[in-house]
Image (tube, rainbow, N blue to C red):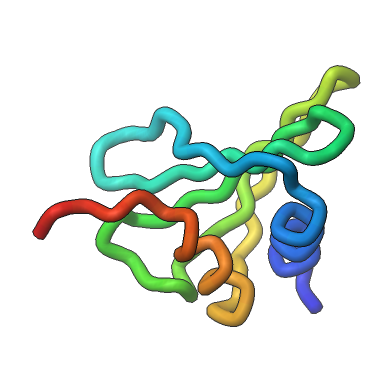
Length: 88
């Protein structure tokens, strides 16, 4: 399993809240709050598919990390379930 999938698995299986977060036009961004209060962000192009997700910023009280890790479609489908639906 790659790093992006590992981050996604942890966020989807232990996360307590999923919210869309601010992103530039054409980008869908999700923020998943973990049990310790830290937040893992994920993003893809709004017109993208489940294999276009990437694990991005991680925020915590002790600091954070900037990621740009690809996510396979297996875990991307889980993120798709929380992505806001946009009108065509």
